[in-house]
Image (cartoon, rainbow, N blue to C red; front, side, top):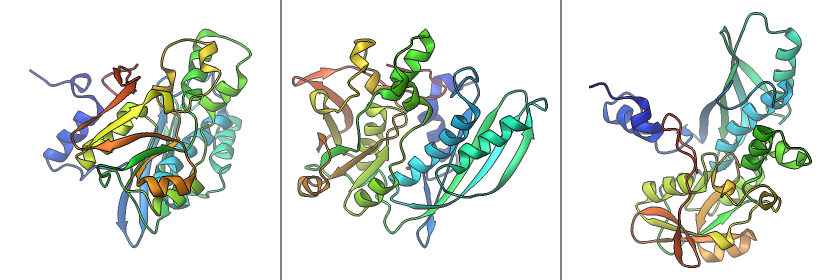
Length: 297
């Protein structure tokens, strides 16, 4: 019987590719190619990552750049270039394409090349290149380390919630969904001392799980300590802050190094395996997002 992608999920697919020698090793969102050269790639696909009615063309370009720069931030890298593959219908207006590329250029990293492809729907695939003096990766966290995060979580998922329901009066949440933060400066500071680091794209539990799995340790996160956007509670009691697309950084480091960083400490690394949330010392169930499996919180 044929194995389906929905049965594997994204992580299962990557394990299959690695085990067959077709890709890898795939332990991080970036590849370190030597002499500090760091490369990453990501794509935004229409009706998967964005809808035309909810996202302006310039915002689309900015977000396509930002999600890749977030991977470089988690590697402590200084970005040097973007390479863009734009897939679009032939009847798309030139003005729309110019807006996409204006957004791509907004973070100040030059677009150096790429490709264009005729397609039925729009997608923007970006390869980002940078240089880093030290890439923490996901695999160096140690029992006794604490976990810090660079900013509040949940605004992006809340913005999507607002758009899906046609609500008004939550413009800052919608803006967070359309325009992720750039944490390049924070990434460089953390990369100098962090034992492991990841950007929060798929959600707190899944991305903390990457650190736990790659570091062969357990990760515990205290729900009460996680900074959350204050307006989420105006929308729902659901744990939108676990659903991803925040593009903040999560790092494991010593308690002394965390004190020097002046960032919120939200959890710890322990002997064992897996990542878990705790509320009042009891397990708290919430999930993030994984492609192909369709899992969400």
